[in-house]
Image (cartoon, helix red, strand yellow):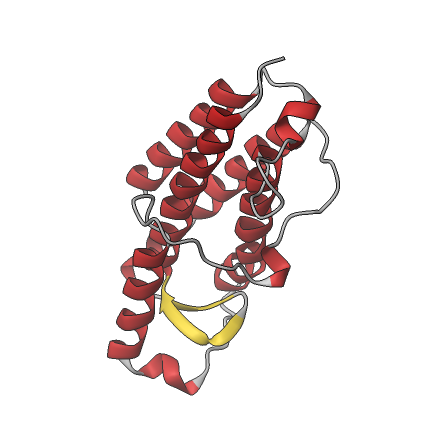
Length: 180
């Protein structure tokens, strides 16, 4: 638990330290139409993380239905490892996200950073509450496709690693921000 919570605290601090001083206009600036702004990167993380919250709630209540494919350990391991590799910060190739995780197209308020911080706190609570479930090797389905299954432990690895990737992307946008 502590490894994820520590990484979440670290990434939250990095986002706040790196971007809180920016204006709303700067947070929403995009280097080109094909790239997300800093604010869009943050909103994407909120959207993705929040999409897992109903699954975490169902796990706490003991009501997490899984597809038949979840019975096959090699499938569970395959998906967990594949997704984690695809979101690693060092990976240069961009990926298209699923529609439910896409950020808004319009300007986002400066408060998006506060929303992110609150979302991170919720995520940490779910992680803290999941120790028994992780020890039981609990398997979950992806929020976007019930047939994509992986261990809860892999989900936390994926979420935190994905956040680190988007921090790097947001820093890239910051490095291209025009001087005012």
